[in-house]
Amino acid sequence: MSIFELMEQFDHEQVVFCNDKSVGLKAIIAVHNTTLGPALGGTRMRVYKSEEDALLDALRLSRGMTYKAAVSGLNLGGGKAVIMGNPDTDKSEALFRSFGRFVESLSGRYITAEDSGTNVRDIEYIHMETNHVRGLSTSLGGSGDPSPVTALGVFCGMKACAKEKYGTDSLKDLTISIQGVGAVGQYLVDYILEEKPAKLYLTDVRKESVRIASEKCIANGVEVEILDPNTNDIYNKKGHIFAPCAFGQIINDETLKNFNYEIIAGAANNQLLDQTTHGKALREMNILYAPDYVINAGGVINVGNELLGYTRERAMEHTKSIYNSLLEIFKIAKDENITTDVASNRLAEKRMNQLAALKRFHLG
Image (cartoon, rainbow, N blue to C red):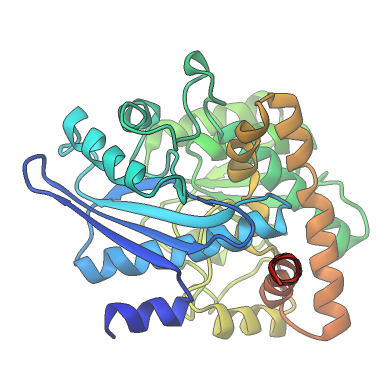
């Protein structure tokens, strides 16, 4: 497809290609929708197989941010930026400051933040060139690490799923698998252990992260089993809740072959390889799926609250609303006989359409 065909497919407003050969910058900023407000979305840095892969990542992720902000009740649109490069070897102050000038050129239509492959220090470099940055360190008046808030949202989402599936939102005596115990996963383990689950399965490519999380389980008297991240073992275990907190597109034909969970509720983005095909497959298998952009919205809620004058307490309280949002989505899905991801899209689109109609009325 051509670039414009891809933009039409994903219904994007704007795509900006950023090139600065002097510092090795190749980046893409995708602005999906600004109906509810300026497009908010983090800047990720990673090695892509091709420029097309980078563009598709930016388009998919920015669209997800639009729906995430809408369903979370934020007055923000959706955007995303990707920097093509190795985050371990290609970073520099000059690169991020150059990128910051591109962000500044959009005059506030796009607000950036930390994402996969970038950190608070990188965001501070970007901030040297533009004020359209959120998620700064607390020393600069920002909200700091969003991981605890994201984890709280996933935890509340798990409880909503349990309420829908089992009639009680307690996680006591449940078996839960967590794929990825990084920054968000570690906090999620802490929240889950407070509920006294029966057992946790853990996996992560970082052995130290798994060691830390497993020691927490042992200290709390909860059975734990560490699984090899390079196999399909975690998908084939029998349990109540599967929490993908690492990779996207992990719900697919291959992983569903021997899938033995009743709920999917995790922090990873783009969990379904194909939203239509695999959303329907989960429904047919009677697996309750918490749409990823709803359950992992704590991070964007946290950053969005900076626009109001940040307090962690308000961000945490706002994040707890994910529980009720998911229960509403599950009700829509049942009432309309549709998948939960379609139901969440409809809920988000309803809010965007209502505001768009209101704007047209005032302009008319």
